[in-house]
Length: 142
Image (cartoon, rainbow, N blue to C red; front, side, top):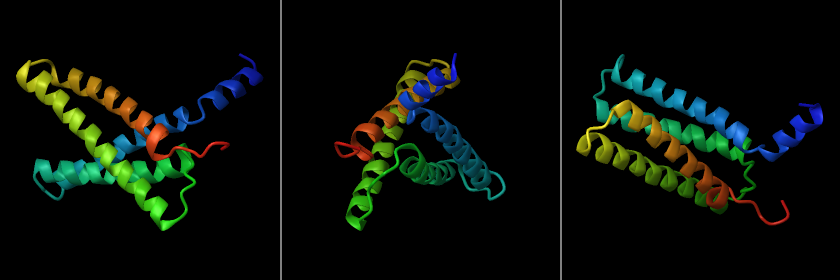
């Protein structure tokens, strides 16, 4: 692969590459905050999970806004709309994750780790599409 091919490939996937990097970091934030809440602070599982989810979504919003989709929203109204859209989308895909776990693990008794992994792949794809098409969409010509 030549340097020119690498540049073309990077240009083609300029949003996907940082999305994957910050997606991994968002997962780290989620797990680290959960562990901190559940273990040293001894907060029960569900509140720890919710706090970790909120921290991860906030981290994801800030990083996606700046480094992945390079948001052009610069007024209070535009930023508020963007934040609400982002959190509502993440809430919806969080529900998809929970629904997958409920149906495939609790009802069908499939392997929870395999289902969690597959559900997260679906959630990541849905989050990317929603972010690209609705939340951080660019004006024509940009």
